[in-house]
Length: 268
Ligand code: ATR
Image (cartoon, rainbow, N blue to C red; front, side, top):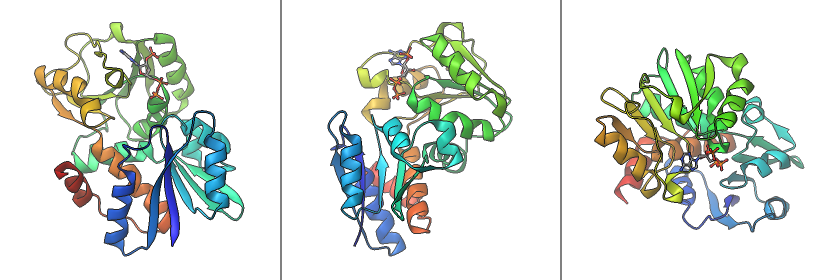
């Protein structure tokens, strides 16, 4: 049976094995998908041992997406732009690397949730790895503008500069924001640290679609704040399933249906 894995630290909480098991059942593919915990600094060893032992492909989660980018011998243009890889595949003694996170976000926003991006004003909060992976796919949707805002403004400005040739993108400090956005995407790690994301009043309000790239308890603080301000609030469970579907398609050549899987995970 073809073997796949998700590699991360921590990884015990990962829903990816459940998601890929549902995809395999639906598409009639026969595969095994496991969790692999890599100790800090040992991503390469764990990943290479998996591939040497016959593993066909791996998803990579925090904190190893940049390590995976380095390990990949053949990277897609979108992985190159993201500077991070969440998808690996063994190919004739080489390791292919791709990034399916941005596609997952855009598909969840537009196809699943019906949140338009074209011609809209989008705010992306955070300038770390999670943010970097989604800037190019968001710009590809042709928003009116994309503002990347970050607590540390210089990181937002650097990130915006890096993608400036792809569309109307600018960096800002969190405290400089005024409330003129249609879509607000939280890509910070504030709630995982149990901290509040201090957005200026007026950024979240009626008519705004707020989306947290995290899901479950990790998204609760931001989404509660958005709801309290009158905004629509959505978590990133659909993004997780959509990036997995894109990963599955790249490995197996079949695109599974995602709606039943999102519903199953929500029900669980
Ligand atoms: P990741 O790869 O998950 O994005 P990261 O590179 O450590 O991780 O980036 C975390 C992001 O969350 C950063 O944008 C960080 O802001 P700074 O660059 O100013 O550190 C943001 N972040 C974390 N805690 C935050 C908080 N309490 N308020 C606002 N932003 C926060």
